[in-house]
Length: 78
Image (cartoon, rainbow, N blue to C red; front, top):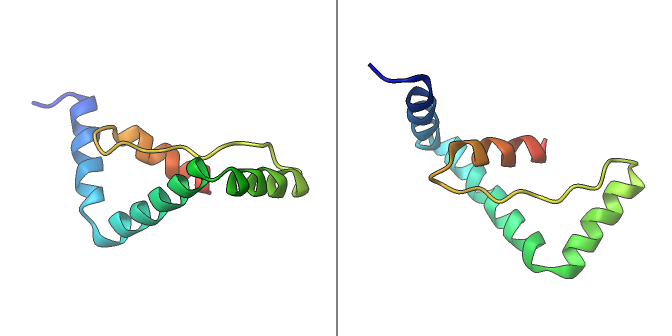
């Protein structure tokens, strides 16, 4: 019998095997990488957030071994 944490981890791992989900995560990782490595890109993102009167938040990088980080990446993009 699996505990809840292992069950969630297993479900998240299976979800990442779905082509559409995996493709979306790959695109998000590329965008996060760009904004983490580009001072101009980061400044433009922050300026756009201020312009739209949204809270200024950076993007979150995910780790394949941490299912919650993938969830946080997707939530931040939304």
